[in-house]
Length: 89
Image 1: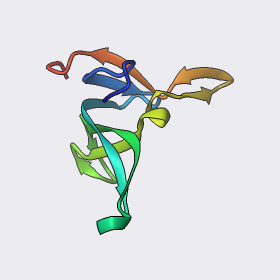
Image 2 (image 1 turned 90 degrees about the vertical axis):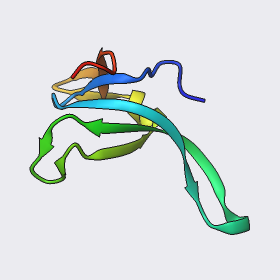
Image 3 (image 1 turned 30 degrees about the horizontal axis):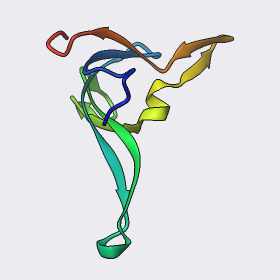
Protein backbone atom coordinates (compact mmCIF):
# COMPACT_ATOMS: atom_id res chain seq x y z
CA UNK A 1 0.00 0.00 0.00
CA UNK A 2 1.43 3.38 -0.93
CA UNK A 3 0.83 6.84 0.47
CA UNK A 4 -2.06 8.36 -1.54
CA UNK A 5 -0.15 11.65 -1.74
CA UNK A 6 2.63 10.03 -3.75
CA UNK A 7 2.00 9.00 -7.33
CA UNK A 8 4.42 7.37 -9.73
CA UNK A 9 6.18 9.93 -11.86
CA UNK A 10 8.89 12.57 -11.91
CA UNK A 11 9.63 14.66 -8.82
CA UNK A 12 11.94 17.59 -8.28
CA UNK A 13 14.02 17.62 -5.10
CA UNK A 14 14.28 20.98 -3.32
CA UNK A 15 17.87 21.20 -4.63
CA UNK A 16 16.58 21.11 -8.24
CA UNK A 17 17.57 17.55 -9.18
CA UNK A 18 14.90 15.34 -10.73
CA UNK A 19 13.99 11.77 -9.85
CA UNK A 20 11.48 9.20 -11.10
CA UNK A 21 9.41 7.42 -8.45
CA UNK A 22 8.90 3.85 -9.67
CA UNK A 23 7.45 2.04 -6.68
CA UNK A 24 7.05 1.41 -3.01
CA UNK A 25 8.26 -1.21 -0.54
CA UNK A 26 8.97 -1.86 3.11
CA UNK A 27 12.18 -1.62 5.08
CA UNK A 28 12.94 -5.10 6.43
CA UNK A 29 15.43 -5.83 9.21
CA UNK A 30 16.58 -9.02 10.90
CA UNK A 31 16.66 -12.52 9.48
CA UNK A 32 14.65 -15.74 9.68
CA UNK A 33 12.23 -15.70 12.61
CA UNK A 34 13.65 -12.33 13.77
CA UNK A 35 12.68 -10.59 10.53
CA UNK A 36 10.69 -7.39 11.07
CA UNK A 37 8.81 -5.40 8.45
CA UNK A 38 9.24 -1.70 9.07
CA UNK A 39 8.25 1.59 7.51
CA UNK A 40 6.98 1.90 3.98
CA UNK A 41 9.56 3.33 1.59
CA UNK A 42 9.56 5.12 -1.76
CA UNK A 43 11.83 3.75 -4.52
CA UNK A 44 13.10 6.43 -6.89
CA UNK A 45 15.82 6.87 -9.51
CA UNK A 46 18.02 9.84 -10.34
CA UNK A 47 17.41 11.35 -13.78
CA UNK A 48 20.86 12.91 -13.89
CA UNK A 49 24.48 11.90 -13.59
CA UNK A 50 25.78 12.48 -10.09
CA UNK A 51 29.50 13.21 -9.70
CA UNK A 52 29.42 11.21 -6.47
CA UNK A 53 27.01 8.33 -7.29
CA UNK A 54 27.09 7.97 -11.08
CA UNK A 55 24.41 7.53 -13.70
CA UNK A 56 20.74 7.04 -12.77
CA UNK A 57 21.36 5.94 -9.20
CA UNK A 58 18.50 4.26 -7.27
CA UNK A 59 17.37 5.58 -3.89
CA UNK A 60 15.02 4.35 -1.15
CA UNK A 61 13.57 6.73 1.45
CA UNK A 62 10.83 6.37 4.10
CA UNK A 63 7.50 7.75 2.86
CA UNK A 64 7.28 10.13 5.85
CA UNK A 65 10.67 11.61 4.92
CA UNK A 66 9.82 11.83 1.21
CA UNK A 67 6.64 13.86 1.81
CA UNK A 68 7.94 16.13 4.57
CA UNK A 69 8.74 19.80 4.19
CA UNK A 70 12.20 21.30 4.72
CA UNK A 71 13.17 24.85 5.58
CA UNK A 72 15.05 26.76 2.89
CA UNK A 73 15.87 30.46 3.34
CA UNK A 74 13.22 30.74 6.05
CA UNK A 75 10.48 29.13 3.92
CA UNK A 76 8.92 25.68 4.27
CA UNK A 77 9.02 23.80 0.95
CA UNK A 78 8.32 20.17 0.03
CA UNK A 79 11.40 17.93 0.00
CA UNK A 80 10.08 16.53 -3.30
CA UNK A 81 7.57 18.19 -5.63
CA UNK A 82 5.64 16.25 -8.29
CA UNK A 83 6.32 17.65 -11.77
CA UNK A 84 5.35 15.08 -14.44
CA UNK A 85 3.90 11.68 -15.25
CA UNK A 86 6.20 8.69 -15.23
CA UNK A 87 6.73 8.70 -19.02
CA UNK A 88 8.16 12.24 -18.94
CA UNK A 89 11.77 13.16 -18.14
